[in-house]
Length: 370
Image 1 (spheres, helix red, strand yellow):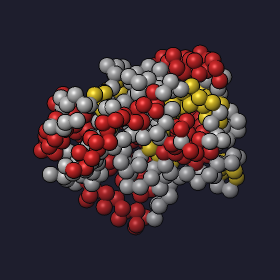
Image 2 (tube, one colour):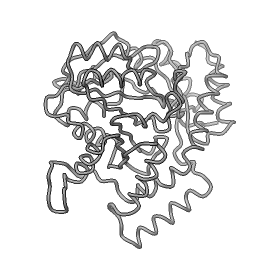
Image 3 (tube, rainbow, N blue to C red):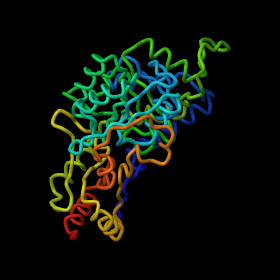
């Protein structure tokens, strides 16, 4: 049996038909940019995430840049980011002219802690901080970090590219975020058919500024009050996402089942499975395990031999990336992000994965011997 790492083409029975009907309607009405379908998606997204303001944009990287700009982060401002994240978090800070400072994550939770953020605030005196929620979880100390940043006057922006549908303390993660962003890249739990992103906020001022930045800084059609850029969400992607959002809960249930079965049924001592903290409900974006760096290479070859896909999310700390040279303002490192990068392994996980596929992965991994 061949099991891919992810399969983004397992749609619901009627999904292809409804998306096709919507595409045909766009071809007839010509509402290709903006228009009612974008508003329909934004309204649906706001309702699903229980946020005050939700808006779409061209991609997840732009979403972070828009959020930074709208929240008041300017040239040469210091911004804290976790040392374990995707490169877009780092480059978004640089692209708005600010200076990234990396902060090491916990070896146990794989996320930033309140104590680490406090240490970095005291050491670097930043204007803002980016809290990244990885793996379909939330940082366990999110509420403490939010409170800390508010007390210290640090703007907190949350990168939720992997966290749509995640809950913390029983509430949507996005509900309490001052400013948050996400990605609708096709491989995400809520994926478009191309690039798309989203911005969420509790602030009407930030929402209004974000909408202007997304659309060339427009204050009216030919009046531009800000230097923005073209990051509009296309109507076709919005239309696709409207239909995908209708099925999101079912897709998340399937993903959560995969992660749960791996953690419960894989007993191989070579792998240590890690899951969300007790106060977090995951969305099943990724199955996460760690193993010794020395054994991971051999295990990956074993998976390849048995036609099982895998991931290593993420294979490098931000502060160690070649592109960070000349841009990194400073860092606090205990070697944890580097260790995680060399140790993490992700097994196949996607919506509507069959029980036979799960059983095959579980059996094969259990039979692995160092």
